[in-house]
Length: 316
Image (cartoon, rainbow, N blue to C red; front, side):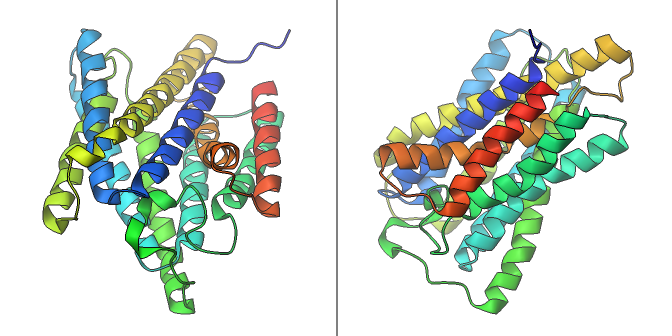
């Protein structure tokens, strides 16, 4: 019977939870301003993860503070660059490009640091990158992809197609967003064991301050009380980050047992971020199942490729 490393199902669970959170965020933001939804969700996310960290009774170490703060910088900068890409009408460039960069850059760093995935896993990783692009890009009509609706103000309707200059700017925004999300993935994977969930909690708390600071500056319309149903967005997102963190820790522990070398993580950077980055597939599947949205041919092909990629990575 094939033995699958614990890191892979945990990373896949992270992708599912991120996909559910993204879908629920889109549903909530069709009724309320996305900034208020995001701030309320972040409040519940940070509170939940902090309570988990406190319950584990692990020390808040300097390592946890360092990597948690680094992860929050990546998370916040990636989100802001993605928002800017949407504001310019170039989400169908910035969105998929950020997803591919977020998955690909950790792989490059992992190989440099000595990770050596199996040949089957390499095929799965290579297949996953275009699969994520196909799913995240969606149809050619901007604003219609379910994973993007959480960034669109409900009263503004669909956004017009981006002109060529905006598309070029979207490439830049997508690359910067992808670098930010890659930093988030890499930083959480580098946190040393022994500090419980504090690296994730620090990341969430810093992001909470940034999010409410943006709300205070922008002063979006709508009440916080009306956006309280967004708590489920925060809870699922927090669980996604926590399971991703646990996946990275599992990969590190497996490598330590197998190789005895800290630099050779068993998929901390070459496998775990790639699997977690498949979350757009679950957002699209939920939109198809619950909202009756139709997937484009490219998205269907991307969904199939995502499933094959996960199977190959697990088999490797």
